[in-house]
Image: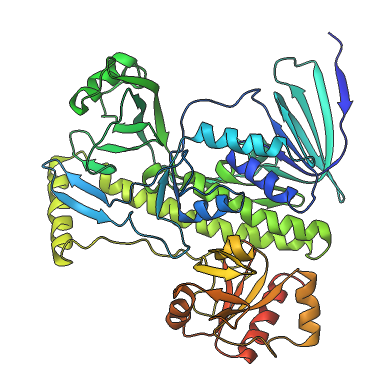
Length: 522
């Protein structure tokens, strides 16, 4: 059979992988009028559940796409605490999953990944600047000083090929990333291997349990019991040393494990039964000239913290504003190095955190489990069974001022009024580079030269406070935050992260110079 190659129109950005990370990045870039070509080797969406949980930051990200997870029937939040219990069902740990996070959304939401992917694909398919190529496998990548050149073959017909050139390439093509391997990027592998059976269930009628989400730390069989999105439930069972991966994944074995939980073929559908080996690793390099990687191509973590997909979506947001700035000429290409330095360290934190949780959960030795139980129960009693809350995680060193309080962390968000719109800040005001003056005026914050540079970044300077300010606050989120960081001003990035906080106008000006230097603008 004769091979044929079709040359496709050039793109600004080529993205390999049309999962949640690639789709989100394409949609965010399209808001800047950037031409994106998405290449996905599978012709159809993989219709089985995978990720089922997301955090408040991802809820905040989805809100920028018009998806309000508090009101959307495809998402659920149980407004309940998350419990870890031992074999005797005594509480070992209680985590606050019922409160609002500082970013304005609840701590945890549950969803079905195929439904989210379908939503994002539908959204992307109606954007003229996005081209989606499904059923094409990328098999060659080269780059020069001006562009990246990729060659792909029809997944079903290897004799048919297409070629594409783009200014930049993003590999969001999963754990077995072709882009990562083709670029010769090595990985740091923590060697964290536990096999778990994942069972995704659709009960015939509402399945209620209290708590709705909990962890059974039983050395005989560590087990996770959580929602799987509206109308779904998930059980995760750790495999024991003598168990066969193939045998335990068979439906008859799955139903035996579910019998104590009241589920059977008569009252539920087994949507997926699969054994996964939990891994902890990250790529040593995320940016190589005009190519970069994101999502599972860049990092893998055990699911105990529920942060795997969340980390990938953060990658997409962090890349989107940098690539948009490079393409419109407001940022130099070197700014991509801060994507790598910031996001790698952030992901490594969650990889380590997930491992630490797993080391506690996956204990199968009865004596070690008894020691764990005694220690954790004593710690819980010492704080009167008060739930713990998650800490804000700082980015790695990058485009933010390390010596100012709260910088490098996700910014808080309150409800405000802006131009007659009352909503969360992001939806009322939008997202961009911003200097916020909390209960302060904005005069004299930047010099004329700094103001001109900020305008090139499409930056905005806004006062935030009572009725007479640019943005009127409807709660105490911002004044409370400024009290915590002992400041009056904040510089916010387009990805909602705090670039700096400041006490005085002079401090704002000094911080601005630091940030623009880190962006490579001075």
